[in-house]
Image (cartoon, rainbow, N blue to C red; front, top):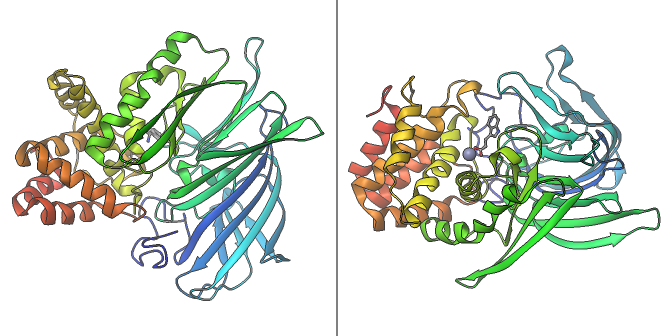
Length: 448
Ligand code: TRP
Ligand code: ZN
């Protein structure tokens, strides 16, 4: 799904300045039906059967999906086998699954890809992390596990996809795992069916479009902790957290506040965009990630402040997607600012947090738009982004700021969004002075 659903990818969105090979201009994936079998949790072994419902906003000579996952077994187009070519990133060619079939403008097709083999993720030397499918081998004290960590472009290490946030889509995910193993994914849980061969299949459905990197999956020996539902403004939100059985109570404790956090942030941001939420705690030492409706929370990040941050991303990043990787500050600035909103909602002083953000920028800062991949998740994206929003709020006051946030999340949901779009909205909702102030925070080399 892209801007406005039927409108398609805005022509100026791709190629992305920081990731010029990701995504295909003109291709609009509306839905992914993902079926994964994890035969031996903790190992990279994977079988996948993915059906993409696609549409084009211009005539395409072929369909070029991002893909670097297990070996492709078969590709069908509306049910019929179709020729394909899989290029890999080896000799400077991008990782693409090229399907040799033309797709005329405004026409729909269903593309089904089956694959099997080891999924090892993609090492990202700049971000210093392996993205995509993660395998946590069994140890004497802990059974094996797998999960996704995909921002910015790890999802194509798992399934073929249009791996750019400007093409958000809905997802149905069915996970087949051995009996006794818990499998969870982004969205609401539908069915859990036991099979005679000792496996079971669980299906999740996510009906709000999100970027591909936000697809969250977690498989392991997990305790499921169901919290009381949240019901407000005619909304009903189910809350469920998942903890590896080896994880102690001290790690689990802060997650009991999730419902209060969702309630407090909804007051500022508007209706929560999904019908379920929770955290899937994982043991490796990675950053936390705001996977849709199911944040991926390393043991080390199991703190209230990080929970707040990932909940905020459900609006900023997941419901409202980026148009470009240069604008990560739109995600990280709002999510970081949410930490201050929560601090104040608790009746605590926000001054130490404001000071800590300024301290983080002491070594240096830059205009908010990133010009390199290394800047995407740097201190400027987080701390300067948050300070910019605080400056705006201080100028316009709480009521206007709340209206502005509600308008942003309502009007930009599902719409690939740029810094310019935020500035435009600032001008229309808050006036030219506010827009000028925000613009200074966005563009000046040093802090205004
Ligand atoms: N978006 C994540 C968060 O702040 C952070 C993140 C995602 C990240 N991918 C990354 C940080 C890669 C460093 C490298 O919640
Ligand atoms: Zn973040």
